[in-house]
Length: 320
Ligand code: DGY
Image 1 (cartoon, helix red, strand yellow):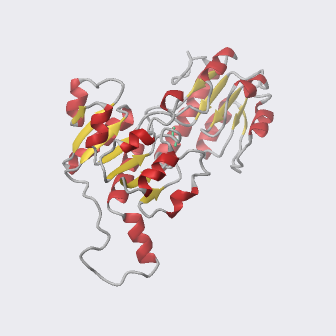
Image 2: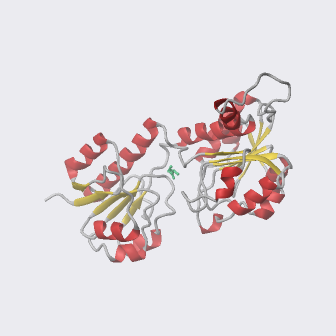
Image 3: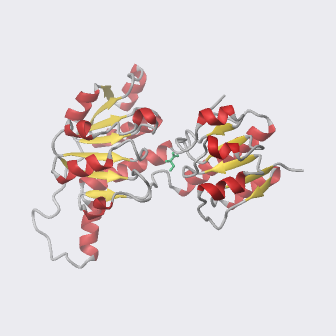
């Protein structure tokens, strides 16, 4: 008898076929979101689960899933999983690091350029039939080239964002809990600065830290008030790192010129005040969503599940 596993949302057919070679799989190719109760009922008799970042895996859920041995998230972020609770319940938890770094860095740049050069706003203008002709002060934006890029969080994704700045002749500054090694700084053409230095000097500040209790509202009203007047904020990391209400205030007051946002507090129920702001580019948490990368994420999660339940040694174990 093959172990029973569940995949909580739709995945690619070939990844499902791969899982079916090893497991008795309950799929959700209809892609129906599951609330906590439905998730608990569906997991109750399963040995493994492939989850998404919206599936909350905590002690309450685990208490109802006595057979569960592995939870494999299709995301690098794992703030939906209580690792301590998993360890106490003898459940292995995994994520998908590495495979989405370049796509997420590409998308960060899409937000940088779209926000600074008002791409979405001017597209809407043309579509609405409002374009009456060329004039000098039309949709004046901010130059990206030769500007100062500030990167908060200099891990795999932050470093790739930095490398892409080379072609724009930017000054690249970063802040993290500690400086990177000299070779990395050279490759990324980036210099470590204090948090205050980053905030006061960056024309464009982009955030690349994971969400955890320690990073909740890391970018608070106080932090935003230290940013260079007229700067742009880019956020494609995780909702909750930025205090969205404070960000709205900074945008309303004109302290910030604009923001490019792919993640929000309480997704998908973002603060509706964002919708009315023309200087904000809004996307629905898709920074990693190239076809190749989302496939790689699903396949890596599947490989983690197979390894977890066959060898007990998944490559991306979070709670050894
Ligand atoms: C991740 O992998 O954490 C991303 O946010 C998924 O889109």
